[in-house]
Image 1 (tube, rainbow, N blue to C red):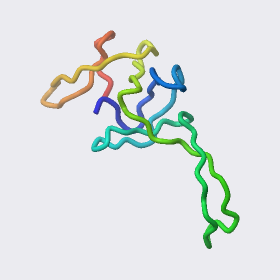
Image 2 (tube, rainbow, N blue to C red):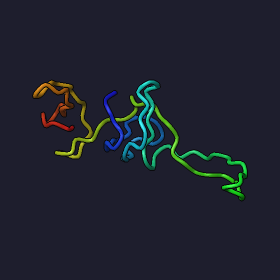
Image 3 (cartoon, one colour):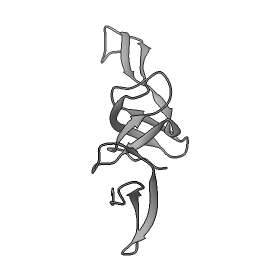
Image 4 (cartoon, one colour):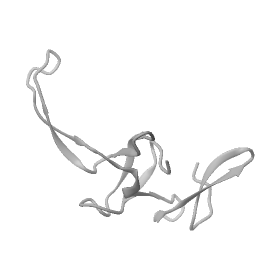
Length: 102
């Protein structure tokens, strides 16, 4: 997957197009990610001993990883990435700037 937890991404499709946030969770098996402040959904929560009130929580929902692009730390713009081997390690490199992201 082209993004990891902690990366800054920009949404390029859907109703949240143009929104920027940090990846909170990444699931490579499902190709799903959760981005901070994007795709807010309402979740109905039952009362439990820890949460006696219950109610409706607002939290970030998962979205497909193909809907986001990584933000290049050098330019601050969305960029595609390439994976290259540097000193025996596979690293991510920004396509436009050519700088290492990892």
